[in-house]
Image 1 (cartoon, helix red, strand yellow):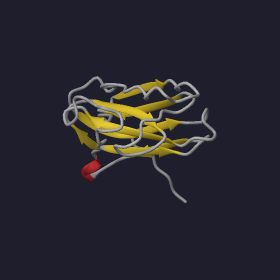
Image 2 (image 1 turned 120 degrees about the vertical axis):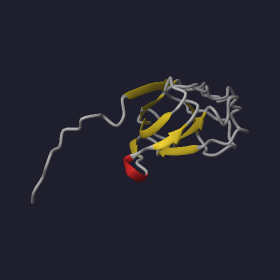
Image 3 (image 1 turned 180 degrees about the vertical axis):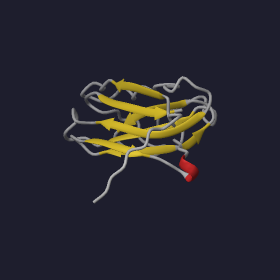
Image 4 (image 1 turned 90 degrees about the vertical axis):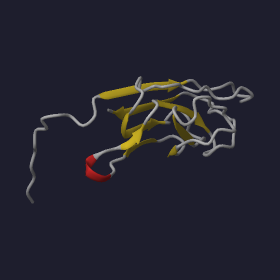
Length: 138
């Protein structure tokens, strides 16, 4: 078996954003918090999503990602996310997202996200404990 290593002249992604979304109360009456524009950019490419849901052994974490240009005001339970990534209860899941020509998923208004117990537009329940999300982008 052969292997190789190539040094890249220009790194594809230069930003690693991290957000720890605090768990809601056990009653889950409070809606989950929206982390706005965690990429700190108006445009770029999304390359990786790393979800650490190990502190919620009994709850799946659906990370709803919004391109802030398309949904500047995010209403949890109403606004449809642009992308949804899942980490099963008690797990850490890493998604690598490369599109054509080595580019990630383009976004035009910065990325915002929320962690919920259901995917899609519906659902307003946050998770009982913290979830840490790391986003690699340009």
